[in-house]
Structure formats: C-alpha cells, structure tokens
Image 1 (cartoon, rainbow, N blue to C red):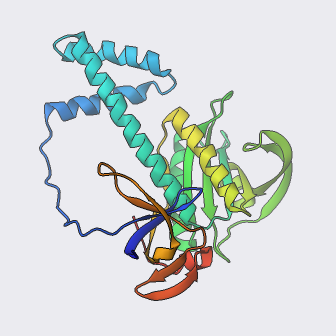
Image 2: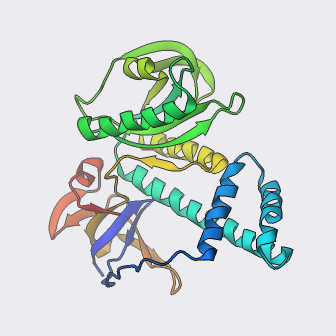
Image 3: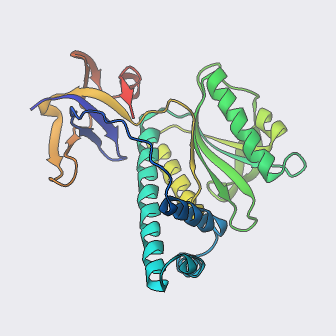
Length: 294
C-alpha cells in the first residue's frame, strides 16, 4: 500500500507519515463571547499572575479566588481542575509543534541573548530583540525558534534560540571570550557577536554540527518553557511537515487505532517522491526541495 500525499515529520528518532485524507474544510463560525468564556479568560490572567508558584499552591490560590463565582467550592474545584487539564493539553500540543518544526529545519547556531541594564529594561529588551530578529528573518533570510528563560539565581531574563543564518546573511562579527557558557554552565571560550553585544549586552553563538545538538537544544528550551510556561517564538514560514508519496517498501510498521489517527513509521532512508517525481533518499538537501505544510 503506497501512501500518496502523506504528511511526514521527524519525532527525534523516526520519520512518521500521516496518510492524506479528503476531509472537507469547514469554516468555523465566530462564536459570541459567553460568561463562561470570560471566566476562562479571567482564569488565564490569574494563572499567569504567579508563574513561580508550585502547582499545588497555585491550585489552592485559584480555587479560593474563583469560589465566589460558583455555587459552592466543589464546583470551583472542578472548574480549576478542568482548566489545568486544558492548559496541559495545549502545552503538549505546543511542544509537539515545536519539535516537528525544529527537526524539519537546518540550523546554524544555538544562541543565548542577555541584556545589559545600562542599555535596556526587561521590557525594551523583549520588544527590541524580537523586532531585530524579525527584520533579520525578513531581510537576511534568518530562521529562528526560541524561548524566554530566567536565570535560576539572578532571575535575569535570557532568550534562547536555534537560529539558521544563510550564506552572506551574518551581521556583525564573532569574537572569542573566556567566559561563562549558559548552556554547559561552565567557564569556557564563548563565541559572541559584536552586533548583538552592542545592541543588547551579550550574545553566545554555539555552532550546530550534528542533529543530536538540535535535539539537545530543543529539550533544553522545553525544560525552561515547562518551568516558566513561556510561549515559543517562531520566525514566519516554519513548517511542521513535508508532503511526500511513500513507497510500500519504506513503511516499517503502522500504529494507531480507531480513536487515534493511524500513522506509519518509515525507514530511516526512505525515498522522497513528490508529484510522482523521485527526488532521492531523505536528507537535508532533499527536504529543502520538498513541498511542506503545517
């Protein structure tokens, strides 16, 4: 059984194919905002107000805060539990999306950006670094996936990112510093960029030379996203899947059931075929030629 027009992604260990389906697209109707929707929004604001609280303490605080909005405390407890479950499901989906996007791209560096208090406040650092990376993506062809993190001891804000820089797309120049490396937590020679150091304070660029370093960087960022519940930041146009026709001989085994989507584990060196044309065995160069989607 060949798969035609399958969506294929890499999960860190295997290539996975999702069969194409002809499900008709249904445009979602815009729903009127209800009292329930407003209560959920109020919950999310309250949830985000104390990001440092441990889960049990946060639940207790939220139950106490929301009990007056319900008939009794058990009803408030049920509401809070459901919201925690919803946020956890959303978080898992964000993590899956991040990994699929990250593993489908080629990356040049894992970077950490830190601000100098003489140059920025925390708010201006967030805004201007995002604006800077946005313009480098649109004008110089950069790609990035990143997450904000606070230092364990200093609570100082950092931005960690996987970054792709095309040939002739670099700004500034690199300088070596005998300094502290944020990723390894050791003193060592760090590679810093003059452009970002002048604009923000400090930058660390660690070259990516192997896929395992991408996976390590992704899990490093996910660890801090989990701790701080920060949003993942993407440059525009990053896709999660390649679209490919898959030969039966490249399907290793199927998995799934009636409740969950059927998927197929593919051979590590499966043949990439698009619109009937054989492009070759899967590789970064071949992936760059394949049609992609989200």
